[in-house]
Amino acid sequence: MPSHNNIQDDTIQATLPSNETNVTNGTSELKGLALIQSKASSYKDLEGRYNMKMVYKNFLASGMHTFLYGPSGSMKSTIVASIMLNKAFATEYKVHYWAFDTDPAFNMAFSKIATERKLTDNIMFIEDVTPADFHDGYKSVIDAKENLQNTVIVVDTYKFIASADVNDKKTNAKTMHFIKELCKLGACVVSLGHTNKDGKKNSGTAEMEQDSDAIMRIDAIDQDGSKIATIKKAGRIRFAYHTPITFKTATDQEQSEDMEQRSYDLISGIESQADFMDVESLVIATQMSEQDTELIELIQNTIATHTEPQKLTQLVEEIHGSDMNSGHSKKTITQKLHAYKGREWYFHKNPHSKKGILVSLSDNIQELVDSINESIQLAKPSEKNKNDVF
Image (tube, rainbow, N blue to C red; front, side, top):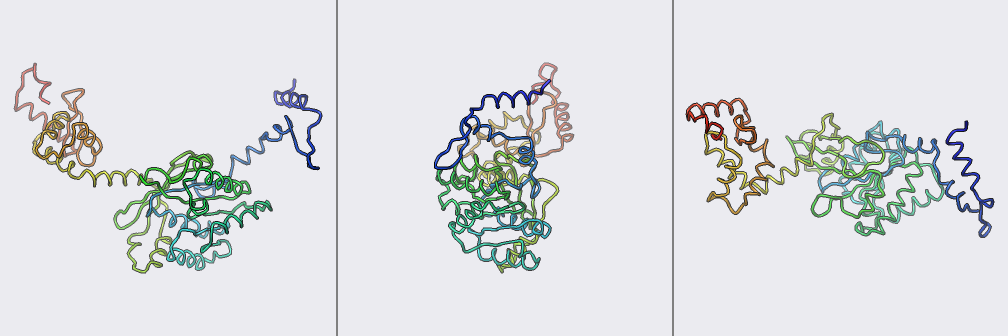
């Protein structure tokens, strides 16, 4: 009995028109079902497309375009440069680093490290160039169908090859399609971009996310003399399941007054970490804390005036009615109590009520229970009112 695939193939062949080609100006072109069939993918095609080679962890892949964005100071260029300048990495791959938006100190540091590590044969650091140089150079590569396997192209920053108009849909679509042509030749492309004005999304248009193979975000924070940054998924990723990657600079790497030496130390001293840290959430929490300092202090002082943990609803009422409250609504107070629980104060289940939430400045649950039980014993409530203590 013929297989389903054979039946399908026979059906297609039987319905193909006898004249499969159309000759126009001496050029033979497929048409009709023959044209559609020419677009079909075989298992071999799919195997080659989906079993692509991961270039760096689950961040970069051959034949794919990763768009990495983040706020200013998030170490986008520094971390990508560190990856490209890794001796094992740069020995395996050819790197084209297009430095459109980097400063002289970074450029000098990058070139110095590449020279010291004897990587200049495999790394092309391209600066003092225009978007036309990028497009003209790679157009000739595309036209010649040159092999770009094991080639990594870094665009720092994307807006420059989009003719600096990163918010124009047509420009982005055209630029993304150009990058896709490079990927078809086997190149791994990583473009660096900035966040938009509110810092929540990448600057640009929907075309950038639609036509990229991976959208990732990077955030950085200072901690104990080091800088910690995390790259994580910020949109769809076509080539692999992405687990976040955290990087850390060596302690006090930013202290040098010599800007070139500072860039050199940062690039040389970055290491990926085994443990993930959600830096974006930490940054948001820090920003929130700065904005909410006054209300946080009021909540803490109100809790501290009580020797026993307070019911959440009663605490909200007390804070709202306080003379120190500068106009915060009950809704806002409740939201902030939830937002900062576990950091500025602690929530506990009321052991004498199924629904009640108690708020205290201590996270010692046993201490909390002992305090409640002691209060109950001292008050000696009747059986009827026993559950109404808190």
